[in-house]
Image (cartoon, rainbow, N blue to C red; front, side, top):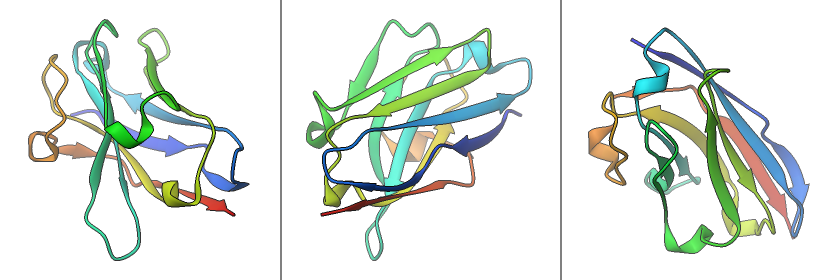
Length: 124
């Protein structure tokens, strides 16, 4: 099983950028799709972005399209989430996860392997 560790969160102002990283251990990372999710206080965890095993297919929730970019470097066993033009409503704990298959999914129920999360706080 792939172990996932997120990093890169922090406190920023509205309009700033952050890049989250998710480092994976294990030899199977390059064959698995990966996803980013977030959970704001008092809200359910929600899908943010996903990428197929090759990076050839990416998916985004509507609220981050044009602002966030998911990418991966299979040689480094790492998936990234570049977040630009951050808004206060982007404040949440961000999690990376793997569905254990090569095809990306936007369905949270298909993800069984999760990291511990990294906090992103955007002040107005």
